[in-house]
Length: 121
Image (cartoon, rainbow, N blue to C red; front, side, top):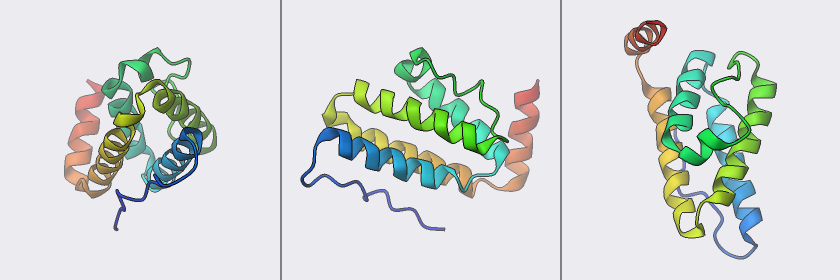
């Protein structure tokens, strides 16, 4: 499992195209997470950003088991969030999110079970 955290296109194009590419990369990487890992990643993402919390799209309200609607809502939320950020912060946030997805992917099963158990309490 490799992840390319430097794949954002920064040469040419406008900001919207770069946002679209970053969002697509994030969606593609997060799509490989199982439903439990995806749910915990979405919780992290929503807590990571006040802009994400204020968006009309509640990531925590989404059911990670319904991937189609989850990814549509995530796409909308990420686009709104990146548009809210100053352009100078895009790449840093993009890399952080991809690293977080990678962390969830690598998390061993026993740690995941423990986190899920703690999440239920």
